[in-house]
Image (cartoon, rainbow, N blue to C red; front, side, top):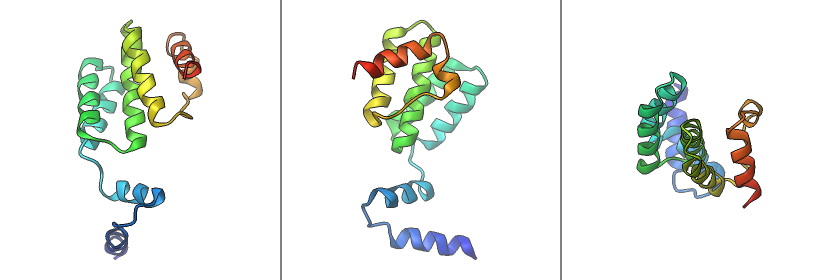
Amino acid sequence: MLRPLVIAAALALAGCGTEPMRKVQEFFQPTRGHTALNAGLKQYEDGEYAASLKNLLSAIDQGLAESDRITAHKHVAFIHCASNRERQCREEFRKALAVDPAMDLAPEEAGHPVLGPVFRSVKAGR
């Protein structure tokens, strides 16, 4: 009974263009790239980096909500850094920071010997 009410409320407010309303809409209507993002993140966690990279890039191309786009770019950067492709790693961090300049890495990510310094360098250069 609650789910139909929530869906009806989301549909009724669908025309509202405020940022909080867009977040609600994104929750109920995932973007086209959401499935590819989830697959890419699972593959990343499983260590399947080539397949993960393919799905994450596909997700970005298909369209993602801002927070998901940041997540995708960040993980693409991680894959490039881990593969000694520093230029591509920097570019993906730049793309993530373009979406959210306040974005930061989690403490365990920031402490990584490759990721942390590259990210800090990109962020400082903005």
